Length: 288
Image 1: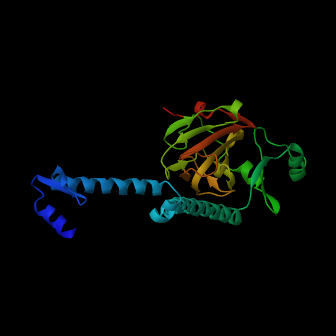
Image 2: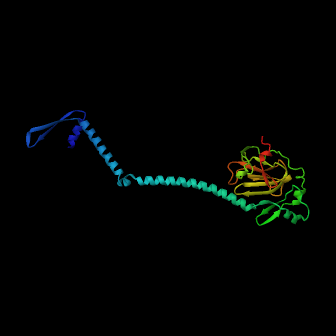
């Protein structure tokens, strides 16, 4: 048989006649014309087709799990996807931890302060029958663990209030008004967008009555001026004054930031109040 295959391979480019004899009937014979080259090629194609069909059948059955390692590839893909998600979550957690650490540091290092207007009864308790000057309000700064008052005598007698508050004034920072005065929506001031770190200046002479950090508004500064005016600045990246400090018009009181949960982009929120009523800051500033 092997010798026959060798001969066929040697003459694979020729066309041969194959004769078949019957042992029982030697005079009867059958003849076939064959081309060895085409025959071998056909056998190879048939074998490859059979192997391909068998692999397809095995791949589509549970046996393919063991032969082609399908589960391992799926598990590897899932593991890689989970690892990428974990990496992204770790980055987010690191940023959150940094923010929480900063919040904890501020809360630990600074008192939780707020200011209220002293009533006439409180004035009488402090100064007896002395008449409260017209247009002058006193402010009290409340601190966690106790309360202390700014020096009312110094506020009343200070020369920074004698000339009154001059409006219109230059804006606290040069930038673009990104949100206007909308008291019906609880927005009692204007937002002035500017680059982070830009100097913020006091619009008039006054005394700082509150300098604090809050979760919603970040660093906040409130300044008492003459004629019953109070200005409020929010979302500083840093502040330069504390409660009780005297500031002059044009002094740099802090830097533009985007601190606090309510901040969306670097800007300063600026409010003007007079005798407890909010005013539209755009009417009191030279914004053009």
